[in-house]
Image 1 (cartoon, rainbow, N blue to C red):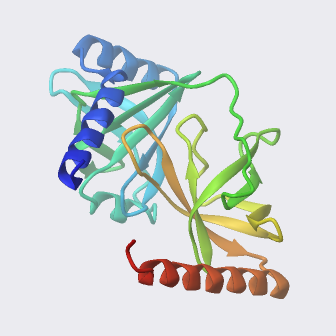
Image 2 (image 1 turned 180 degrees about the horizontal axis):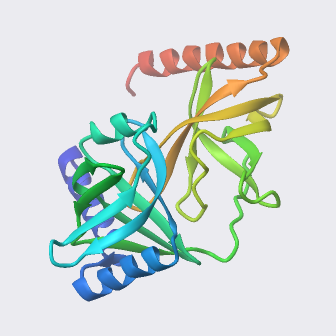
Length: 249
């Protein structure tokens, strides 16, 4: 299969998957929005550039087809949020994850106003969430800050001496912006693992299914852990260069 054909096939598959969760009926969208407003459900706003903040839906203007969210003007994430090309809203109603894009957002006093969505995505969450740990896949083991009894093993997407990017599946409730974890275990290989503190730097959606990339900064990283991390990064870079330079069969 050619690269173009493969890309087309993947796009069609993704469209088929997300269409099963799409809500387009105006009455159903309005009903879900009113539930968010009535229950004062927290809504997480995020952008591809990593900006994020939490707010709530305070007004639904059906005549103007607009929404208003309460926003603290002094929030340091606000300017980055407004300067982004797209803003994704995510909220949870019991076991339901709702997701939609904010169209034409504008800040008016202490409220962020935007057009009402014409498309919303509704994902059913599992009653329980469990990740099967694999020693072949670098992962970080941590406890969800909002649920002390929820232990997670999240796949590492990117790694540096300063921090790590993790994959948060759509089924897992978002982490609070800027939260800190006193201890997490980084498992890079069978014989390379260490504990560190983590501070959430940013969060951004990475696909239409609701998965999120979490960018963390290492805190309380001791000398031994730093040495382990440096060795692993060096070995990974060497292996990557070897694979790139390997002659084609």
